Image 1 (tube, one colour):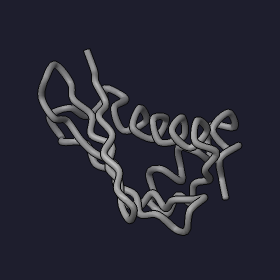
Image 2 (cartoon, one colour):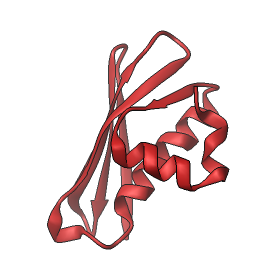
Image 3 (cartoon, rainbow, N blue to C red):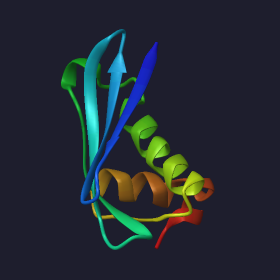
Image 4 (spheres, rainbow, N blue to C red):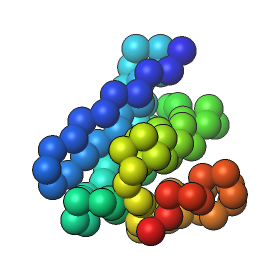
Length: 94
């Protein structure tokens, strides 16, 4: 079972993913004004690789952007590649 926790302040934010109650990875972002944020890093511990957890983090960021009418600038290579490969995630691109 996976769980994602979101932490946000006025300048930065973080999505943490837990797999079987253990922290498995995180995705960080920085606000770029009031209406968009920059995904700058996505990381999943090697012990949890191959489970699709990094993609779940990107999807959580996209869902947050949609729900809050925000746009995303994916500077993180993984987040950018994931969004580029999945047309259904591209509506939030800045």
